[in-house]
Image (cartoon, rainbow, N blue to C red; front, side):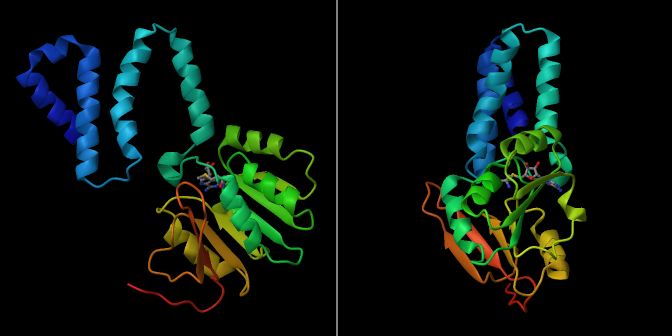
Length: 241
Ligand SMILES: C[S@@+](CC[C@H](N)C(=O)[O-])C[C@H]1O[C@@H](n2cnc3c(N)ncnc32)[C@H](O)[C@@H]1O
């Protein structure tokens, strides 16, 4: 919004911009990126702001038939589903983090769940490494779920389920894994506290539970220094402010 207002101001000062759609789009992208920087948004927003409008203008210039846009919209909808409601987009656990997660699984055979399992790649890696354990993944985005089913086909110790993980009880699992976003963490903590067994572990990739001291934190040796926050929600916990 602020970016658009700034762009409007610049277009009033430099009316030539109104005759150059790509230059106008680049100005809008730059203004949005500056505003985002000043508002201290996470740094990955910057290339999104910079590139979105110019790419949209370039794509319009391709003169594609309208059904292509509709098809693209439907594919994105089936992959990202209700991101507006869940506030959890799709990004995937990398191999280094999966290796770290493997070490957090109990040595004895057990069950583990990935809340929002994405393309199923993580569960596939875990299931191949630990054939003695049972893995469950929940996914609510239809295309992503189908993709995960395909990725995990033939693995007898993986079950990919379609639906909302919030309505699935967590009492059976020794390890509950979440790679979500900051928004649902408070609610997830309440659910985990109510449902998980005393010795079960909740591991959250990148997003800590607000005001709760993790039992431990694992820093993964990958490019982004991924952090895995480990909790025992079923035990007494220390809160902090
Ligand atoms: C950040 S991705 C993580 C994917 C996977 N767990 C991984 O680590 O590679 C989060 C996934 O959770 C899914 N998701 C978000 N909210 C969900 C919900 N309430 N029930 C089921 N899936 C959900 C999203 O569609 C997305 O695929």
